Image 1 (tube, one colour):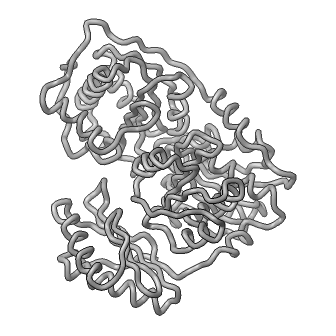
Image 2 (image 1 turned 30 degrees about the vertical axis):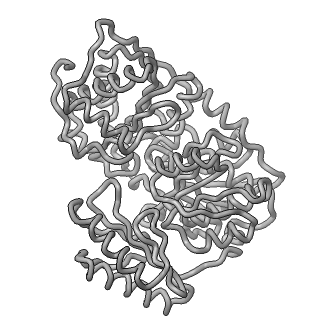
Image 3 (image 1 turned 180 degrees about the vertical axis):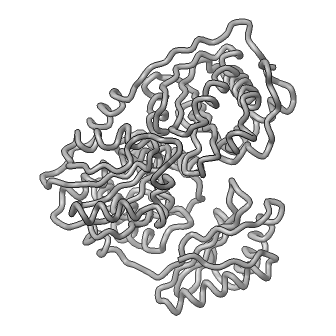
Amino acid sequence: MPSCASEPMPHIFREYDIRGLSDEELTDGAVRTIGAAYGTYLSEKGVFSVTAGGDARLSTPRIKAAFIEGLTQTGISVTDIGMTATPVFYWSLHHFKVNGGVMVTGSHNPPEFNGLKLALGKATIWGDEIRKVYGIIETGGIKLSMTKGALRETDISGLYTEMLTSKIKLGPRKLKVVTDSGNGTGGIYAPEFLRNIGAEVVELFSEPDGHFPNHHPDPTKREYLPALTAAVLQNHADAGIGFDGDSDRIGVVDDKGNMIFGDQLMALYWREILGRHPGALAIIEVKSSMMLPQEVTRLGGNPIWWKSGHSLVKAKMKEENALFAGEVSGHMFFADEYYGYDDAFYAAGRLLRILSNTGANLSDLIAELPSYPSTAETRFPCPDSLKFGIVDRVRESALKDMEAITVDGVRMIYKDGWGLLRASNTQPILVARAEGITEEALEAISSDVKRRIKEAGGPGFEWEY
């Protein structure tokens, strides 16, 4: 075992990553052990060279150093690309032609958390593969090497920005955009990239600062958007674009200061993509508005429903050879002209490309989409030991009365809308959402969903709007 090692707590091994409290759960000893287990996992698959990056959190340099120490003790060589954004880490796997790597990031979680995204091939591992890494620790299967792996440090920021700039060419319309990086990693890349492609950029909170002094870096939550909204209106900008802490999720405010939801953004992207690839398959996340499959169908696409979770969406895209998919949470995956991973900078460039080729304002484009009354994605606590059983019972009840989509929890199809219940894969939480064609329909559907959850033994909760 690595020196000063300690066994990490099993609950930090989540469905999509390893995540925990920085000081209490991601201690140096625990992280060194995880690094050595991951190195063993890689070496068994014939992978001996990887990249490593980290976000702007205060605990990231310490955690990354401990992880690399454990990893190199198994003979794995590491190219450390420094403080960076998650999409830049993803690109490093392609740039250096390696088949593994680690990104140390807490994403949009509170500052006291951090995490590890582990890659195999050109994508991060999830589910059973993450559990295999823990299994190596649990069974004492770590294998150290007589020869320590090499470590080198390099900065690929300029190369990444150059690559990104080459991917986007704007149309004739000149655009002004406000960027809000929330003191995460977005400020390292977004302003320069957007200026490179021809946009006028007003910057907010571009300096990386793990204290997050201005607001929490999650641009898909209304409570973190007042500064971006005010700057868009004050500067008469065409759009405001926010980035989460590690820049794999995008949030957008239109020219009138209104928040645009992830499924609305997807509808705009599909307009461009289906215009060039008629009949393309469209993976639709179960939390999406009924507007999205309606719009995809209208545009000539072929919608199929799929599970929430960025790793699950990327895996489904690869299986189906899909051109594009996205999540309501702001992950956007372009494979028509890009690598297929979630890159909020590239997603911003694609949005500006759409805007620059039309005379319409962003608010006008959004107003063209069907709009239905809905709740927000409502998350409420439920113990891990109970949450899946409650979903199962609600599903069984619903299928007696109506059609339902069951690829991820249960999306109940009412005559005038839908209601969703699913269990979070990463937290002791249930997730619900409802939508109706009228306010009256929404009220009836949301009441029925709450009733079914209560009858299934679930906790009480209040809908968020």
